[in-house]
Image 1 (cartoon, rainbow, N blue to C red):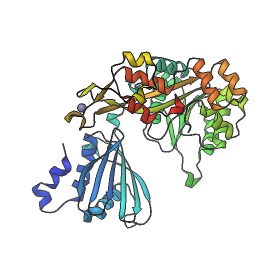
Image 2 (cartoon, protein in one colour; image 1 turned 90 degrees about the vertical axis):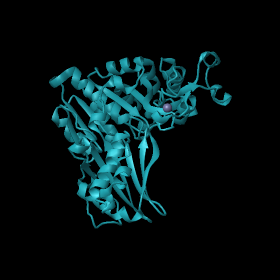
Image 3 (cartoon, rainbow, N blue to C red; image 1 turned 120 degrees about the horizontal axis):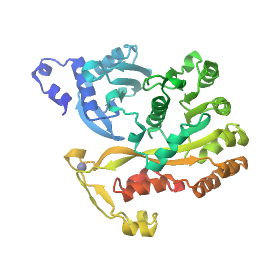
Length: 405
Ligand SMILES: [Zn+2]
């Protein structure tokens, strides 16, 4: 499996390492392992190469430190960066070429005191599915989301930290609309950056250096007669204001916003000077999302979690649940986990909830009202995964904090 080690031990490498072949081997190893990122980092006595597998960094190989400049030089050539520049950060894109399956690379080079640290994010088109059913959402959430995507106007906001699966979920939602409506719908996106090119969708990438910002792009887009607009992220008052106006004037807006829990989005937008009555009438739903690791099916076995943890679950559920966890095997590289899935909380704004937003109630109360109106919290959704034996209680608590219960 480890192409890099095979290459380093080959006769060809013995005669002199070819940097192009070495770098390709590293990328191939990362793709084979289904890694999301490669980290190449000068440590004290080696050049450490690690890959991120299911969200966790894992050592791939250690290379001699004197290869550092050649390797960063190679990546700079691939991404059209300035090769002699070593003391400033640089970023670029590259395609890994057909022999590596056309994987897209986002390359970031950062000067550290020991030399340049290279992080390569991999986007493997063959490994990415934009099927909504493949997101791992439970049936209720999937069904509600499908209904929400059929509405002609209003906002659907996704919230979750970096790497929580928001981008995949948004792309899947757009892809769903394309499949449902075909050429009858006009869809535009403004993103930072565009991670994938989707069929039948006009995608644009903002470029703040050229003053092509979210607000500027959105204002211009409104004259492009779109029906569905995806905004990469709402992070300033101006973008928020245009997005809300667009949602009120006959457009379906899908975007992301930073917030701990789904109900927290409203306070966040009020802090961006959006009037509560505008939020109450424009926001259709907020989807909170996190990724959890799934138990490896080859080595998962019953176990007993700490009482301090099971105490967080309803007693009757604890009594009837067979808790399972992976014990580690060759299939899962001894991690006990294999693959990831999403846990979610979908807050659908109904009349009662919209009323509560109008009254400018604090986040905690909005959360409680959403629960009363039928929202399953992220914690409850996670516990369902534990009960089904899909993951451990510890894993849910890694991504869901106590205030989300
Ligand atoms: Zn296993």
